[in-house]
Amino acid sequence: MAHVELNDLVKEFDDVTAVDGVSLDIPDESFTVLVGPSGCGKTTTLRLIAGLERATDGEIRIGDEVVNDQRAYERDIAMVFQNYALYPHKTVRENMRFGLEQHDTPEDTITQRVTEAAELLQINDLLDRRPSELSGGQQQRVALGRAIVRDPAVFLMDEPLSNLDAKLRVQMRAELNKLHEELSTTTVYVTHDQVEAMTLADQIAVMDDGQIQQVGAPTHVYTNPRNMFVAGFLGSPSMNFIEGTLEESGGKFELDLGSDTHDVPDEFVDQLEGYLGERVVLGIRPENIALNQDGVPSNVHPATVQVVEPQGEKTVLELDLDTGETIKAAVDPDTTVEMGDSVNLRFDRDSLQYFDPKTGRSLT
Ligand code: ATP
Image 1 (spheres, rainbow, N blue to C red):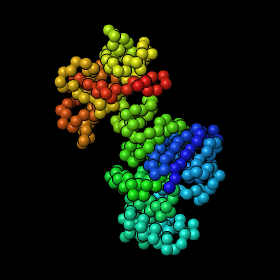
Image 2: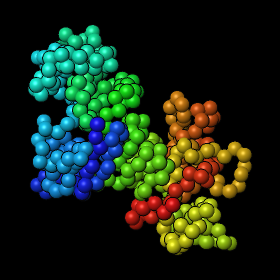
Image 3: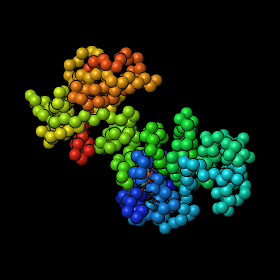
Image 4: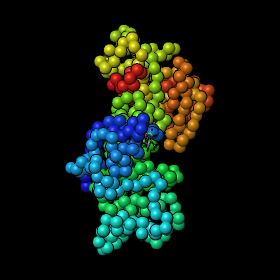
């Protein structure tokens, strides 16, 4: 077992800076997920840890060792790729044995580890098949098996579930969770899928443009995003942003949204004081918007329903505010509304966020 530490890591490819000063502490036994949009540098960061790329600058530590100058095979890691990367002419058993044979592992250890991993992943019956005779999910299990038998200090996984269909992906996600509970091997997992990131991680690192935007426990980052990028990236449908001018009226703060006004709860007055007269962005997640049914007058925003999209456990509404802005609300599936209905929206006071539109920084 080992912790991994990245210190001011930089990777340049000619004129592209793929990783731009990444510092990250990956605790021993943690499941750390690097998440972010395409091209943000997740895979390059993982490949640097694996030793498949050489860092332009900065330091990589695995355990107590600086590994920058170690080749991939010298590092105590095992990698699981998106495309499984199984040897097509070898059987499942041979695929799982191969890495151990390369490291001159004794025969009885190899047999024991392959048997144990096959049991853990429930692929005992498949050991004599070749990859072409397996489903995508089974191939991915074999790829995991091949990593597990190595018993490495760190697992590195690059979008391992992205070639599976939606149902299998959910199932394998649960299995990965279970596997991590049983093995507790430090894992660094790359995905662009924020749901996967939220459900698998005990630590999430949100990346954009080669840099880490925020690190923390998934629910903490979700409820306390440091900036508009993180706030907008995590969550589906994503957070609504509504821009207005911060004003004071009768000792209270309010956002002038044009043809509507948003009352700022008193607890935010201290944080927002310096922004009086300035543009401020209000952030509210779709699940924190309710259709106002009890007539509470404060913070009610009139809107017109444009789209009603039942999604099973929730119904997503697309609504036009009187200000002309379009926002989304995720409401109870029993809610009876139709396209064209006029409704009043209530924003949950405890879930409001405010941002500086110039820097994107959270003000709360
Ligand atoms: P994706 O989710 O699409 O895989 P990512 O977040 O993993 O994206 P990277 O693959 O790390 O992103 O790429 C980061 C940046 O570095 C991109 O602009 C990419 O084009 C560039 N890049 C990656 N590998 C190379 C390479 N070998 N040569 C040149 N540029 C590269």
